[in-house]
Image: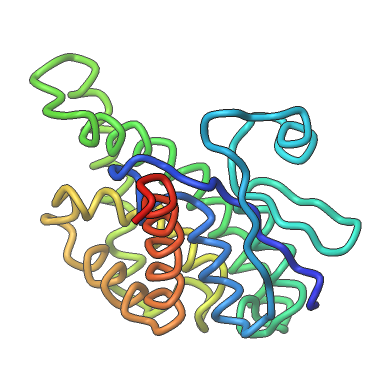
Amino acid sequence: MANLTLTTFDWVPEMPRGFVRDLRVRWALEEAALPYRVASVPFGDRSAAHFAHQPFGQVPWLTDGDISIFESGAILLYLGERSAALMPTDRRGRSEAMKWVFAALNSVEMPSLPWSMLKFIGDPGDTPAWKFVDEFLKLRLKHLEPVLASREWLAGSFSVADILMSDVLRPVDRFDGLADHPACRDYVARATARPAFVKAHAAQMAHFAAADAARTGA
C-alpha cells in the first residue's frame, strides 16, 4: 500500500479551503492508517496529463501502482475494500455502507451542493431558484433527520458512508443550514471530532498555506 498517491491542486482560493474533496480521501486514509503521499497539479493550468487521470479536470484522484481512480466516492469504496476501518466485513454491514454512500452522493448532495454554492458566493436573495433549492434541501434533511437520530453511524460502525455523508453536510452546517435538524448537526460534529478528520483537515489547510508561502516567497 506504500504506492498510494493522492493528487490534489497545488493551490486554491481561500473560500473552498477545508472543503476541497481530497479531504475525503485524506480522511479515509488516516482512518485506515494507510501510508500515502500527496502530489499536486496546477490549479490554473490543467494539462493533458491531468485530464488523462480526471477527465473533468477536477481533483482528487488516487493512484495505486498502475491503477488510477477518480471521483471521491469511487476512491473511498476502493479503499474500503482494503480496510475494516472503512467498511464492515459482514455482508449486511457492507450493503448498509454502500447504499448510504450512494444516498450521500445522490440524494443528499444533489440539493446540498447547489445550496452551499449559492451561500458561498453571497446572499442568494429571495429568488424562485433559491426557494426551490432551499426547499429541496429541507425535504432531504427532513427525511435524513430521524435516521441520524436513531443511530451513531449509518452502517453500524463508522465507515466510508459516514465520511461522505458528513462531508456532504459540512458546508450546509457552515452556513447554519442544519439549525432545525439537531440530529444532522450532531452527526456532523461527531464525525468531524474524529482524530483522523482533524488530522486530514489540518493537512489540507497546511498544503494550501504552503502554496501561499511559495507564491509570496515568505
